[in-house]
Amino acid sequence: MGEFASVPMKDPRGYLKPAQANKLINATGNIRDRLIFQLMYRCGRRVSEVLLLTEDDILWNDRKIIFTILKRKRPVKELKPVDSETIELLRRYLNKKGRVKGLKRHRKDSRLFPITRQYVFKLVRKLGKETGIEMVGLKKIHPHHFRHSFAVHAVRSGVNSAEDLRKLQMYMGHANISTTAHYLQFSPDELRSLVDGMWKKGKRNEK
Image 1 (cartoon, helix red, strand yellow):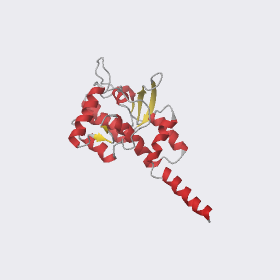
Image 2 (spheres, one colour):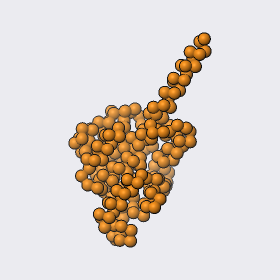
Image 3 (cartoon, helix red, strand yellow):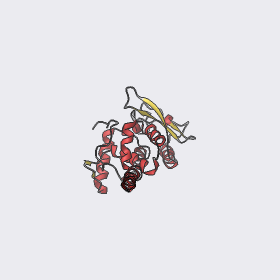
Image 4 (cartoon, one colour):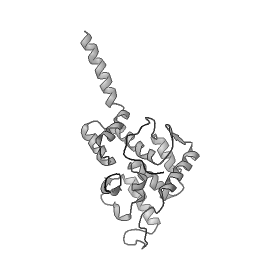
C-alpha cells in the first residue's frame, strides 16, 4: 500500500467528481477523518504529506500550510495556500483536542494525525463501499484519487495559459511540468479550441 509517485494518471476516468469527493468527506464519522480527506482533496496532497503535519506547520494568519514533500531526492518543505473553510476546520479540530497554540500537549508524537497510511487506505475503501463509490475508473478507490481529482478540477476551473500551468505545477509539487501538463486533457476548452480552430482553418483553406 505504498504511496503513488508523481506520475501522470493513466486512467482518463480515474478521478472523483466533486459530488463524489464531497460525499466521501461527508461520510466520515469524526472531525479528524473529515479533515484528513479534506486536506487530501482541497489541497491535492498525498496521504503521507497530510499525516506528517504538525501544528507548527500551520500559518493561521496567512492561511497557509507547510507540507513536507517526500517524492524528491531529499524531503523538502513547501508552503501551500489553503481555503478558509479548511483552515477553520483545522482550528475546530485543534480546539476540540485542547491543542490551541500555547496549550500544546507534551508527547513524543507531535503530528496532528497520529495514525497510519494503512488506516486511511482502509477508511477510504470502507466509506467508498458505504457510499457506492467502490470503483473510480478502472481501479478500486484509494486515497490518491483525491489528489488526481484536485488536479482535474483545477484545470477545469481555469488553467488557460502556460503561467497557469506553471502555478499548478508548483502547487502540486511536480518535479516535471510534463506531469502537470498531462491533466490538460481534462480542460473543457484547451483542446476543444485547438481542434475546432484547426478544422475551421481547414475549411477556409479549401475555398
